Image (cartoon, rainbow, N blue to C red):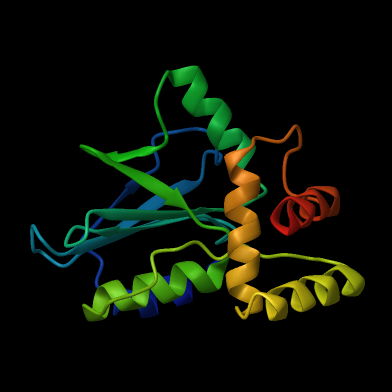
Length: 187
C-alpha cells in the first residue's frame, strides 16, 4: 500500500486540510489529509491513515481537468469499507456529480497517475491489473499474440475485455477463465 511518505512526496508536501475520518470501517484512529492545488479545474488528493500505526487505508486522486477520480483501498480493509457504505446506504462509486471512482489495483498505477496529474501531464487512464499465471499459459498467450501480430499486453487486454463482457461466477479471474477466453478468441 502507498506509504505516507510516498503520498507526501507526490503532493509536494502541500496539505490543505485534515480531519478525523468520519467512518468506522478503518477504526477509531483513522485520520484524513487532503491536498488541493487551489484551482477549481485543478486537482486534489486524499489519504486516510492510522494515527497510531501509520498504516494507510485509502488514497484518492481527483483530476478535475479530465473529470477522473482514482482510488486505491488497502485490500485488508476493502470489505469493511464496502460493508459500511452499504450500511449507510451510500454509493462508494460516486466521486462527485457524474464522476465515479476508478478503483485501482496497484500502488504503482496510483502513483503514476497521481504524479502525472500533479505535473499536468497526460497519463494512461486504463487500470493496471496484476496477473499471476503459469508459465505454460503465458507461453500459449505469447504465441497467440504473435500469430495476431499484436503485443502480449494488447492480447491480454483483448482477453480481459472479452472476459468482462460475460460475467463469471468467481471473485476474480483464474486460469479457467483465461483458457475459456483464449478458446473464444481462437474461434
